[in-house]
Image 1: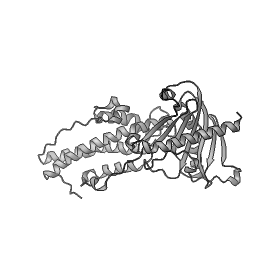
Image 2: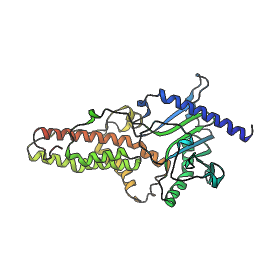
Image 3: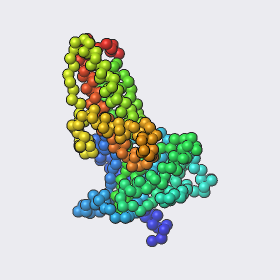
Image 4: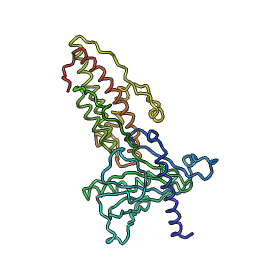
Length: 351
């Protein structure tokens, strides 16, 4: 089989896999796609025989060929869409890619990690990338692609003064015909009326930071917003409400705020469940993550490489944990403020 025939066969294989993904889109319950707005990963394995263990593709550590595809987007809505189609026609950007200047819809970039093929859509916009490499697993392959493309896109964003956002990434293990898709889990529609309650003015800044985090598609910025919520409650909101209560002779209940138990945290952060949120805030969130984002240099450590896949994946892994902690702390404060409001001890007037 010559090169042209191989490319044609691979193209047909990709189309079959994309069709499978389209069909699965109708059969996978949305609740199984991960916490809304959180980066998740879907694994698909083409198994010709049901007796074959498809999970072997993710345990195999042998060197083999991988194909990475990434689609760009002009505006990324956090967890708003449920579309895993990797057709380059679905990609878009503010960078024009006229066929008149290149003669075709593919341009190649040589990097130290391999050749990146740049693809255009029918609107002559840069739509995405394709990257082939040898690796011992999907994580190594994705990291190789990231190392190859990150500095290129970072520099173009500076030179062109434009945002360049990757919408989703797929990784095809050619040996096992297994595809992994990295995506933001979609949000569920909720009835508007059931979520309208009287807010507590004392938590105005907290509610604003929570919505700011939900509206953002940057995990670094989300983390900072959630961190500031915890910081604000521990250092300002809670001391203030306790002081006001004491001044009026009201004794508020002592709350034991711990990392909650749920299925998602049980899978990825089981060691954190039941721990004091204040201790996790002090020992992990602040020292290991907040300081790294807030400062260019922390001690003798190298600057945080925010475009590096291992770094962004590490922060993404912490988003649901810190978000869950915020929800526990906000609910705890609302209960105390509710007691103060009912007894007439709150100095704030409801909106």
